[in-house]
Image 1 (cartoon, rainbow over the protein chains, first blue to last red):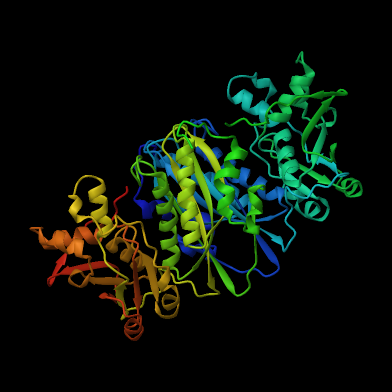
Image 2 (image 1 turned 180 degrees about the vertical axis):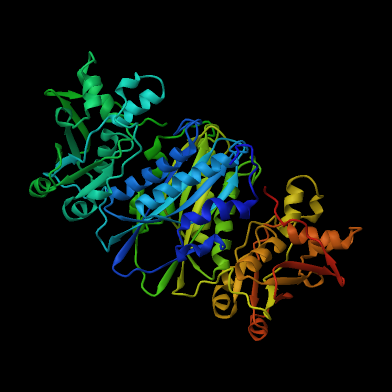
Length: 317
Length: 317
């Protein structure tokens, strides 16, 4: 397929790019309608999350389109994973710039196709528009939980332990390498795509009192739990699990406290931060990094001293 | 509130602009979570539609933000109206340019507040991002129908009559005035916002075999029905209802067939085009403008002659 091929008309684009992504789901009505219809599923709640990506803000404009598509889908899936939800389907808004050609659109759809298969997700509907500006994408992702079983940000109780599901900070390292600010040797093993922790959804629903995915940064996302739960969280960065790559980078840093803080505020880790009472935490078997206390906000410690994490863990303004 | 006031941080924006729009809906979790949870409603289907607006493509960048918000909501509501669905709630993605200041964001939210009240809709969730480009908006709107009762584009049967719910062409006249291409005297009565025909949802569900809202243009939207239903539609523009303003404009036109074709391809009318068997059509009591025939596509006639409507009725590329 030549990069110079001009796009077909709107119906052609829908037929060639998007209809295969429905994977025959009857709810999508072959994308011949402008609505999808979702039958009731008694005994289950529908969990809905929405995330947007804008070129030049959330990803480099030159990123391969298939990778952008997969990051969009997986960032949304990570939100669902934190809820303990089973992925179901998605709605997609694409605002294409004129110079985002047919071959790029096909590569974008191919990324969605691959991950739709991998995560057993179907496209349910959407809207395709043009934009005199950057590639802009918005996804509404749907999942199911048994009725009343969604894990929320609200729910952490004083006395709960705080855990994370895996290494924190590789998202920041990868971003630093991609932005040319860090040496390539610090890159995570596979310059990885988000790996949403959907594997944890059953124990999460059974044992956790609250959860959030680590997308804004560990400290910021812990703060989301603190705010929604009306409690304080105390985190100990000595106990924060990190990858071998992050450990090697840390060993080169003159200010270990500041360096750990960077890993804990960088974001895009797509692990989960969660809380559970001590017995449930033991059953979960995940690394414990702190506890829930009365009060508000997130208190951060390292090597016995309090650190000031600054106004949050936000990479994007 | 001064136009120069700088926006609060993300949490402040959510609290001040968006939380009031949830109108206390428990599903929205006070927007403190990054998901909404929708309990099952046995006996009902959830109908989901998605529409995007981009400044400079779908609306003039200088349009008052409250009006843009209302048009976004109402265009989506018009999709739901065509399905015979009862509006329920919405998810919103806003990509704000840096120069879309706090006062404009407040005006945008005020438009949503007013129409949320008017149409009994609650904000359920969303995502707010920044963009180095035009104001870009995407809405996912949810509604309910009794199980299996959604009116589709597919369903028109040979022998059905084709009807519209009201005057066609005022959307095009209003657009022409706003774009400076038509004299202001041709403006519809109130330079109107879309008025979604939700009032028709019960008879529509009971009597119509198919429906679409007239957003792309009568002929294009009739084409959507033809394509999805695998039939042909024959429309007679002599029978197309028009407003007094459109009739006055038509009287000034040298080419009445071409002028009617413009009204029928302009779009943004937000009336409904629908099909029903003759007895049901009589019960509906709406203006009949044609019939469903074997074949495909839309055949257009005026004053006894066939017209060529061109490649569709699309205003936006």
